[in-house]
Length: 186
Image 1: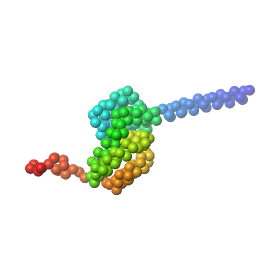
Image 2: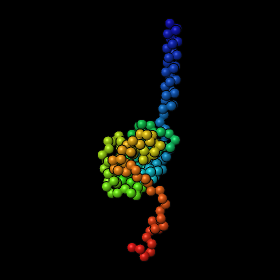
Image 3: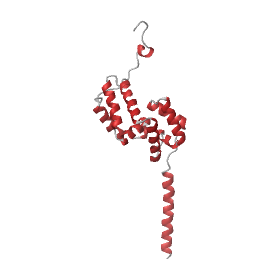
Image 4: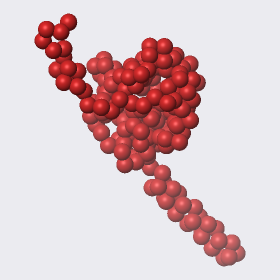
């Protein structure tokens, strides 16, 4: 009988050890940024309005772990990502995300026309929720998601709006663009 008890004890000890290891290895990372800093970072990453940034700050204050999506050293836990997605969808609904990406297209791709920018907006809004979530996560913090998870959707979006060959404008602004129109020009 001692063999059975000994095996049971060893099995119980192994389970206890495994539970400790799994718990310590799977503890979700804490948010690296406080709610205000997280909202400021997000406002910069997504070009949020003051109202949208304030909304996210309030959401981060209510659910601090949601800010873990903005971590640069650890990946956020699934629950934290879910909390973040609920928050960002409330503060930056898909229509607003589409508008923001559309404006970015017009700003960064000088050859893009209004129809192409509208196409980006409409396609983002029409995406299934899971695809929109990938965009929210990626544009909020590119480190939060593997680019391979977003790349095909991004290429499809650009292709469908005839923007696949477009290149961003990386030139510095000209003197007229940076200082405004020259005196006497109209």
